[in-house]
Amino acid sequence: MEVDTSAPARPPPRDRFYARQTDLIPLASRRARRLRGFFRIVSRRLRPLFLAALTALSSACTTLDRTVNPGRNPAEAKRLFVEENLADNHRLARRIAAELRARGLQAESGPLTMMPEKTEAVVGYEDRWTWDFGEHMTYLRLDLRDPGEKRPYATAYRLRYIANSTDVDAVVKALVEELLRPAP
Image (cartoon, rainbow, N blue to C red; front, side, top):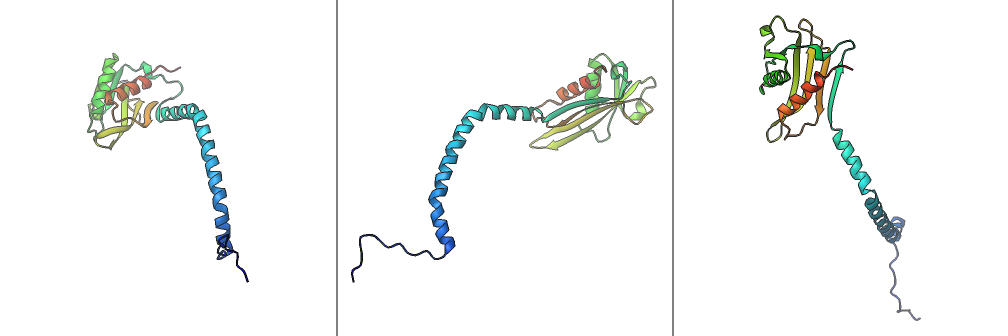
C-alpha cells in the first residue's frame, strides 16, 4: 500500500466550533481591512462637519439665562442693596455692589439688617465653587426682589462650565448686565 507524501495531512478538527472558528478568521480579517479603509475615507470627508458639531456642542456648555416676571422691569430700580451670604468666603456681595455702582446705581452690601430704608430692590445671590488645583466658580445666580418679599421677580444665572481661568469679576459683570437689561 502506497501513501501519498506530497501534501501534508491536515489534522482533523476537534469539534464543530473549532472548525467554524478557523474558517472565519480569513473572512473577518478581510472585512476588518475593508471597514478600516471605509472609515479612513469617511473620516477625511466628514472631519470638517465633525469639528463644526464639536464646536457647537462645546459652546453650549455655558448657559447664561434670565427670567423676569411679566409686568416688571429690572432696569427701573436705582437704589439696590446686595444681601450678603453668611458663608461668602469670596466677597461676592462686595463685587456685585461695586459692579452696580460702576453702572451708575446706588448700591450697598451687607447683612439684611443693614439695609437702608429707601431701598428699591434687594439683590440676592447663590454661588457654587469647586476645587481643582485651586478654587473656581461653577455656578452663580443673581435674584432681584422687592425689599419686603422673599420671591424674586427677576433672576439671572450662569450655569454649567465656567473655565478655571475666567475672572470672577467678568462673570459678575456679565450677570449684572443680564439681570438689569431692560424688559422687552
